[in-house]
Image (tube, rainbow, N blue to C red):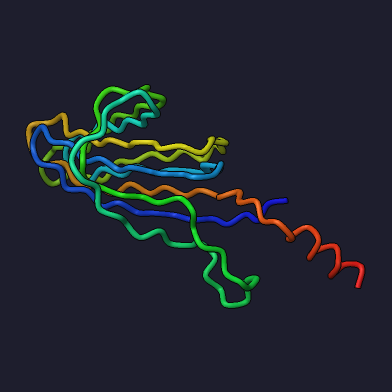
Length: 168
């Protein structure tokens, strides 16, 4: 029996010339990736998702994980996110499972944010995943990356609690 909870994270990036921004996702349980969105305000960005087989370097700093349902009426005890997100560090090698490239308009007076989103649900096993954002243009690249997922945590007793409530 599972309790599902949606979580999201937003990463605002400002990547200097030929630099890299790395996000690390540690999921100790299976989860469903519901969607992601990459918006580039300025410059050119290559996004890559990698899983396993690579080498981690440097240090990562924890990022806040924000629940999508924060209404006080939700079931108590409140579900605590199991997946963690961190930024910083590096990751080389690994199995690349997704690549997206975006370039914002560079025409003066006509610059516009470009973006794309993917809303295809994907079930992912527990594990550590790395998302890299590489500036492949001549100047600074800026933008926003959003990610939202649902955790499928198994809790002993939840099924029995639901049956007891229904059977009165």
